[in-house]
Amino acid sequence: MKKYTYPSVLSIAGFDGSGGAGIQADIKTISALGCYATTVLTALPVQNTQGVRNIYPIPLEAVEDQIEAVMEDIMPAAIKIGMVHTPELVESITSTLKKYEAVPIVLDPVMVATSGHRLIEEDSINALIEQLIPIATVITPNMDEAAILANMNVKTLEEMRIAGKQIKELGCNSILMKGGHQETTNITSLFFDPNNRCHSFETKKIRTNNTHGSGCTLSSAIASLLAQGKTLFESVDVALSYVHNAIYSGKNVQTGKGNGPLNHFFNPQKMIKNEMD
Image (cartoon, rainbow, N blue to C red):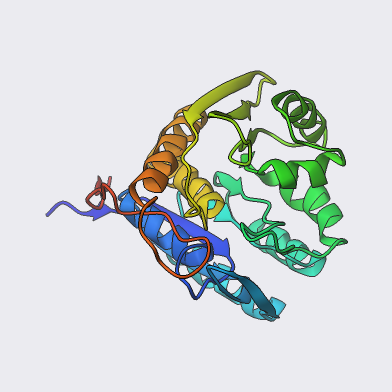
């Protein structure tokens, strides 16, 4: 009898009890794209659609144990890393992942929530730059996060281009800089590929407050598509389209009193089954 496997994606990220961001958004996205989601919890933010109330840490040993338990049993085809808010956590995740064979890593450098709350300690930024960014296949900062990484204002498309080049010099393989914060009719995201070419992706701006977890969704979508065997460029392209449609499909739905979530399941795929050798 033939046997099959699901393309597996590991999300290493924080919690969101309101269900729109963090590990919850990752599980929804990975599942909606036909892949199998495994998870490692890095932090326990107490938040809802209106903002973050508190962040409770997860012990480093517990994070390491979670990674090892998953990696030794269900080796992922791609990894998404989200909220890593302390330098000790950055070091712990990096050193633990290095024990295993390299798989594509999508790093969402979560620093600022949709509500504007800062989610990372100041000294964690250097640790992120020195340790996690060099092992990532692609990083996905928004304009605020790009401004922190490049140490400059990032408000315009030209400033995005300049910041992208500066971030690339930090030892980054590739960058997808999200343009969702642009206050224009059309928004432009920039993808700086491993060969230092810059590609533009333009979509129509959707007027809605329901964008909570859009960054988490995008990074886990890229990881899911990489796990399916798509190229990095294809994964970025399709993931941007998926997020745009998820925002559009949920734009008029009220979930909570603040920034609502995306509609991750606007067009869910069946679980993909790959035949085993």
